[in-house]
Image 1 (cartoon, one colour):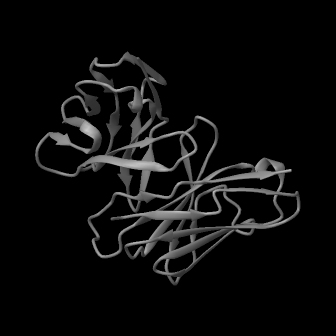
Image 2: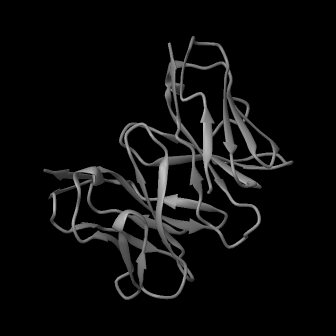
Image 3: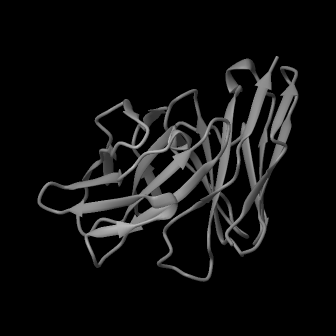
Length: 111
Length: 118
């Protein structure tokens, strides 16, 4: 089965600093990878995806992710974090007809 | 585009009663919808996959007689929690995948429904 792992439960950064949320994957074949964000008591919002092509994927709200095949990673990045980026972030991988999600990383951006 | 709605957003029901949650794709057709359950600050647990016009596919350990899923049209799927118990209290989220593009694996999520069983 395809799976992703998010090694950090929590990431804390100061506003204006770079933000990185880590994700590693384990797949057979080509990975289809996704990042979603969830605000309190809300559903998930799609940020970006990697299917094929450029290793650097740009997404919504200034986020980007870098696909690294040799390290089997798909880390989410934002050059300058905002307080409003504080939320729960999920990495996901296509697993047959469905998505398999990581455990989630809570991001807190302090003013 | 790709907006998914859920109704209700919050519901409180008594033990032993049933409650229905609706999931609608507002601006696209969804041949496939998914139902998830999420515990506080935890990841999403896929409960079942709902295909329009056919029976839902339930994940292992999910009781199909307790969580009834109906996907009667290309824009509507419903989840009915039957004979609810306090342990069914949770945040239920649906998602939908566009029907016309078989390579569009991303799912679009509804805002979730908070169920509290007293």
